[in-house]
Length: 380
Ligand SMILES: *Cc1c(COP(=O)(O)O)cnc(C)c1O
Image 1 (cartoon, protein in one colour):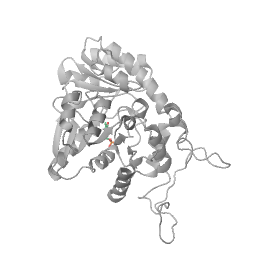
Image 2 (image 1 turned 120 degrees about the vertical axis):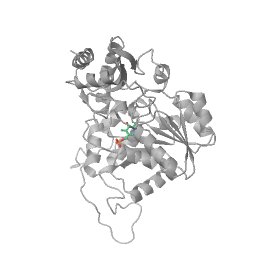
Image 3 (image 1 turned 135 degrees about the horizontal axis):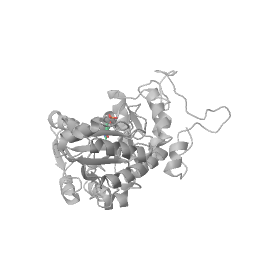
Image 4 (image 1 turned 90 degrees about the vertical axis):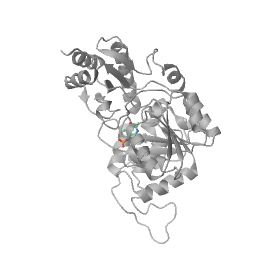
């Protein structure tokens, strides 16, 4: 592949232009899907050879190049079978008996896997209030890994990423940021000093709720080599079709996010005044505790907001059942608006309010979105 890496393009150009075949006669404009589990290779195999479909695949290359360019790394990203496979790859960098710092409100799959490894690898797990920078930095002392997420899912707490990543570096703690919620369009943790970034590309990158895929990015050649070798041995690789579909989704990510965020901001303002809603969490609201930090370290506030419904979990569930345009479903980052009461999952931390409904705002007309919410909230 070609385009992208040597140019100082803006992110909304990179999503469209990176990872395309060379400008040459008869080259396709879009990278093709290569459906082959094995490749011609004769004699002793060398580093440049593809050899076998679990080692590498030509359909991954343009996707891995594009994600790396977006995250500002010169080394290709590594694509995985799912976001959780990418999370597991990141956590596999922990030594047995090691110490990890993780936000109390990290993604519940990551929390569950860390709890599992706490037993099997005899880890020490320090669960922190991520918005409390002093306490989080203290927890870094003597740790092996800092697992960071900002804003957190679903509490939307904003971490002071520059301070935490500097603090991790000073203490020799390996830092990993799950950048799924922000996307590299809003936040680029490697530029702030993170060692590794992980993604669930299932969300904003795929963008159409039709693919499950994950990615890991690092600027460190040794870490990348270790991760690549482990991906080959663990075998959590994406299929070529999923890789192609994800890159296809990335092409419109900037446009989708721009519209979804504009919708989210408008809905946050209106819901903040709604009598059936006791609290709105959205870093884009000036009154939100994470607003000032997000305004400094992010290029936007994203398209996820959480509302707390008066009347508790029963009122929230009834509201979800009345929705017609919004779909009650888990996941986020797709073109269609989804809503979910997070505590319906048994694995969700108990500090997440029972009546909290996460809204993943899509790209529909904002008046239709609000009308459906308002009708569902007021029970009409
Ligand atoms: C969804 C999600 C994951 C897991 O990704 P899958 O693609 O579902 O395996 C990890 N982290 C965050 C923040 C997520 O939202």
